[in-house]
Every structure is written in structure tokens, then in C-alpha cells.
Amino acid sequence: MQTKNRLLPLYLFVLVGMLASACQPKLSIPETLVAPTTKPSLTATEKVEKIPLVVFAAGSLIIPFAEIETAFEAKYPEIDVLAEYHGSIQVMRHVTELHEPIDIVATADAALVPMLMYATTNPDTGQPYADWFIRFAGNKLALAYTPGSLYAQELTSENWPEILSRTDVRYGLPDPRFDAAGYRAMMAFALHENSIQQYDLFKAMYKGQFSFPVTIFREEGHALIRIPEILETKSDAHILIRGASVFLIALMESSDLDYAFEYESVVKQHGLEMLELPSEVNLGTEKMRDFYKNVEVRMDFQRFSTVDPHFIAEPIEYAITIPDSSPNPEAAELFIQFLLGEEGKAIMSKNYHLLLESFPANGFENMPTALQIISHPEE
Image (cartoon, rainbow, N blue to C red; front, top):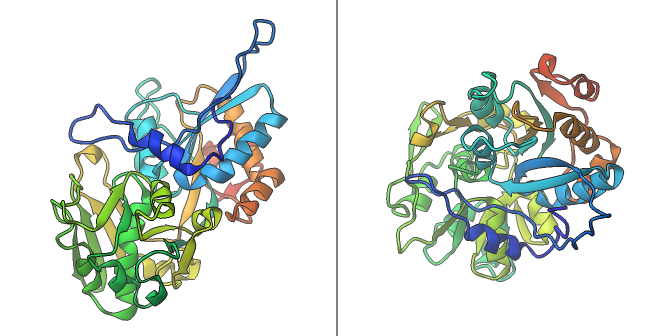
């Protein structure tokens, strides 16, 4: 099994991921989280052909999904789960651009499925890479730090933008071109500005930090953040970019980073300090949906030339689907049934990541019957 011993220290994952590089022009494929394997060799008489189930998921799911993998394989020993973890946009790219044979996609932003998978055709079938997804979990954005972080004793829910903008503070940013947590971190500044009606905080944080500027435009209460095609920090910047939010965890634990926006579940899983953000900012409160939608992020990014890469701020929702190109869709159905069943719910809850009480599905009529039974059409 490829992903045993998943709970080895996260810095091992980071080290593996940082050695990865892409072969695409202008753009490197960011880090990958794949747990090492220490499975012993089998003798000829012991070898058993198993069904490989390839799961690509958001990095914020790595800890609970590792436990779900173990429990799932115990129940279905004929299936071998092979999991990788990336930023949510990068998860999609492995399907729609690299055309890898992936059985399950689980993303931290449900809106990415129609944007990137519905809109892209599988060249082998002529069908979209997906035409349904299930919303299965939420989360909240929080500011993670450690007791040794600069100005930690001064930090409040009101002054965090000012503290993060100080030039001696080392701030970690997930690359918003690959990870939903990255564009959500930028949204947090604009949402905080809207909530207190002070509109200079975003610029104070990001102005002069990048070789090509990240900009914010405001008109009639609406904020538009634009991400350049090339996103790289200047040599004197105090912002550090990584391909996925979870790659910032090890840097915080080693005191190489002071602050980073993370999902609350991830902060709790790693035992870090956490500043809870107000509902106007944390992207985790349904009743604030109308307030959130006044902030938008757009990518000036050739990689998205065939789709319109814009992200409207909204409550965080995780989604899961089976790509049209899945080699083993039946096994994928079993995994989703397990995840959304009682055993999966218990594992997710133990890891501070609660599942939804029910599972609304987009494209319900296109779903496998077995998954229709455990979900319902979204309103």
C-alpha cells in the first residue's frame, strides 16, 4: 500500500514536495504530499492483485484521509488506496491538464469542480471530466501562529492586518494560483476592510512584496483582487509563498515563519496557536454569504485561458467527485460511501473536521445511483 505510515512528521512531506519540479513553461507544478511507504516485499505466493484507487485531495484533508484510508482498506482489503495531496486547483490540473488516471477528486472549494472539470472535456470520451459533485464538509479560515511568533502577545482580532504587514514579520502565503487557501487569505484582508470600512489594509500588506504586483480595485462596495500570471516575491519581501497551505505548517513549527492563514481543522490537528477570525472574515458562516460575495479574486493567468478563473468569496465548502476518466469508478463509489457513512464521519470528527449533516449534490441526476441514495439534490 502506497500511503501507509501517513502520520509521519509533516516535514518529510514538505521535503519530498519541495524537490518536485514541473516541465511546463513559466510555471512550476507545486509541492506534492505523498506519504512514504515501508511495505515489506511479498513472496511470490503472497502477492495478490489489488484494485488501485487513486485519490487526489486538498492538502487540508491529509490527516483525516490517512486514517480513512486505513479503515477503508481494512474493510475492503481487495482495494489499495493511493493518495496524493495538493492545493485544490492543482488537484484539478492533474485531471484536466495532465490527464492522469485519477479515481477521486476532493477539493476544499466546491466551486472549482464546475469551473475546471465541468468546463473541460475528456479527449478520450468527449464528455466533461465531471458533471456532478457532492458537498461534504465546511471549514473556517483562521490565523495560525506559535508562542514564538513575533508580536504574538499583541495579536487581536482587530489588529492582525497591521501586525502581519510589519516588515520584520514572516508571513506565509499559499500560492493562490494553486491553492484555495491562498486566494481566501487575500480575501480575508478585503473582507476585514469591508467590515471596518477601512480600505488601506490590503495595500499595506501586499504593496511592494511581489515582482509583479497583486492589485485590489474597489467600486461601489465591491472589491476585485487581481493575481498576476507570474507570482514571485521580491528578495526583500517578508512574505514566503508555498504551493499549498499545509506546506507552511512545518515552517511554523521550526520557527521559520510567524503567521499563516490556515483552516481551523488543520491548526487544531497540528496543535498550533490560533486566532479565531470574526464571522465577517472567516468564510465559515452561512448567514454572511451576502456579505462575503462583495469580494472577488481573478487570475491573470494563461494556464486558465480556456476558463474564466474568478473566485467569489463564499462560505467554505468541500466537494468530492469521480472524474469521467476514473479507471475504477466502482471502487471510488465505495470510498465515497465510506467517507460519508458513520465510520468516515467519526474519523473526520476526531480530526476536528466535521462533515455536513446532509450532503447536497450538484448534478444529482448524473450521479451513480449508490451515491444518490446518500445525498440529495442541492437547492
